[in-house]
Image (cartoon, rainbow, N blue to C red):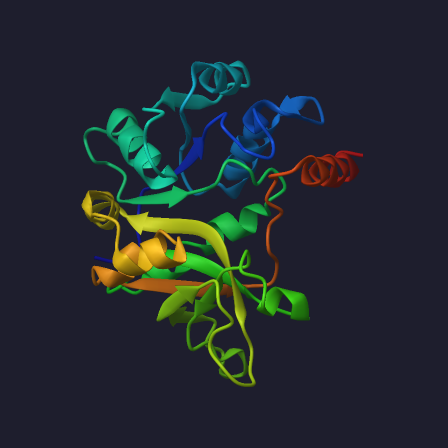
Amino acid sequence: MSRPQAPIVLIPARMASVRLPGKPLADICGEPMIVQVWRRAMEAGIGPVCVAAAEPEIVAAVAAAGGQAVLTDPAHRAGSHHIFESLGKVDPAGRHDAVVNLQGDLPTIDPALIRRVLDPLDDTAVDIATLAVEITREAERTDPNVVKAVAPFDPAAGRRVARALYFSRATVPANAGPHYHHVGLYAYRRAALARFVALPPGLLEKREKLEQLRALEAGLRIDVALVDTVPLGVDTPAELERARSILAQKTR
């Protein structure tokens, strides 16, 4: 295996949200949020983009904007299962050798981050790639909602891609030194995604409530690329207003 030659971007989306119901269709500068995310993925220019939608109204919204979307089983327990089902529908012949899993609540994401997540797959030993940002706000170090990626980065020596040793909601590693905020954007080799979704939930996954630990427990290798910014995830009305403000400024 080498760097993927034919990646596809898949965006899982569902209407259910505890803090912001119906958020895929929330208006942002005249378009539904899911359409804004689809546009950022298209701007990345790494391959085709498809939305894996749990409800038909999301499919309709994406289609109205000229995009591709497929309906997936709303009973799936995680976004990875939605994208795996959608991959089988849009590419049954297996032409795409890698899948970028882009969350459907990142309407302001820099397309460069979507491109960057493929970089760790330059190493043929890597199964799954993801991103992290060095934490600079002290409050984030102890915030359990900020997932920490444990990887031996050494930016001073030019090592900005490193193997993930663990992910945790705790402040790890211990003692003085940098901590890294995990960004939940993934690139899977196709075979790794197929293996991952077939695995039962892991013991550490259930304890930390972090799906990526299932992969590590099963021996799949995850490498992490260091980036400079955390994309804004929209999960509350306040975050929605912030996303509207950001995109409004960009369109002026």
